[in-house]
Image 1 (cartoon, rainbow over the protein chains, first blue to last red):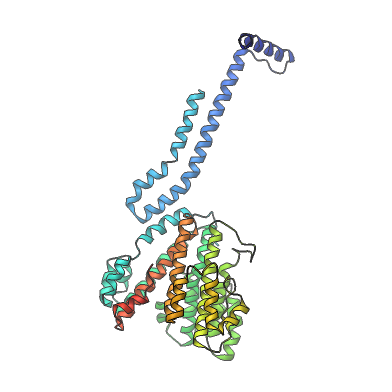
Image 2: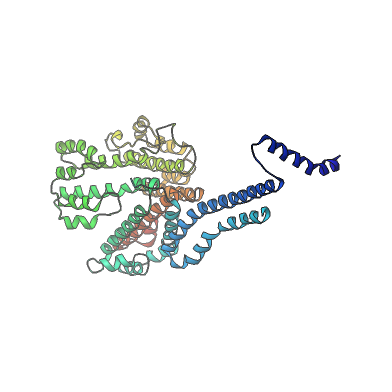
Length: 103
Length: 355
């Protein structure tokens, strides 16, 4: 049953696009549909990375403020402060994985 | 009020670092065995280096220590006000107005006794919210009424004007000083809590309010105990500060007459009873009021410390630093004064509040 359904799928897509063409609302061949799917994928990846970067920025805001405070009191805190500040950056790196999965 | 968003992270990082440079128990043990000039030398090697060096040429001995302590305290607290923005500034300044009150009292007393402005100036602790300019103008006046005029626009103007009439009748400074204290304590809780029942229930601000209430309660308890002990015929209502949870006004008036009932009342309180039980026991047996007052101070300090670990990035840590710093200054002063008059080490140790 499933096998039949799978083999019939291209035919279904074709009919569907023909139906769309017949409706006249959007002229889209299978290639165009593929492109569109790719576009959505890229947009989704972009949103994922963007949100992650925004969150990382928000987290760094507090840590950065605290780090600058600590450095102002004691110069030796520069390196630990810097490391702590960029820790949330890992969030963005993990989010970057999404780009490769979707790409 | 300062504009902008609250920045507890920044202030917290700086405050915690400064807290680490406070004197430790070990340092106190060393200090207790030193004379005034040795203490000054010891301080020169710590946090207080700059102040000691600046003032060293003009003062010596205990005076040097005292002025250096005050100046250092003022420097740190001024910094706090400088750093903080927004809501945090509001919460910190509210508490540091304590020093405005102290300064105003000192200035009024100075004017009253015709002290030279320069001498008054050395006694001020410039840690409050009043601007340098206002204080300078206050110092130039030689009449209390003019001084009150200078304060026009600040929160102290109105209560002082009312109290001034009483001052004119009696010629005593007490009404003016009471008016200042009262204004300070009443402003502590203004705007943060919308009155009983409408307080924030949780979060750092609820704890902050709890802390301020404790401060008010302890102040009331202290006054009540002193009144009950001395048997002075004063109306307790004039000293009652509104806003605490331990007493209400009628309770206080009733309890001042009966010392034991007063102690029992404090012991039965759910919020403070446990925390103060040891001190209350001492109070019943030894009736040493000073010990009890130190226990109150220690309880407040410990309380603020607990708060600062419950909500790390909030006003609590700052508050606990303010208290700890004040305590340090008072401890060092007690040691220096104690050594000067020749108290022995045990007696001085009893005067200290160390956690």
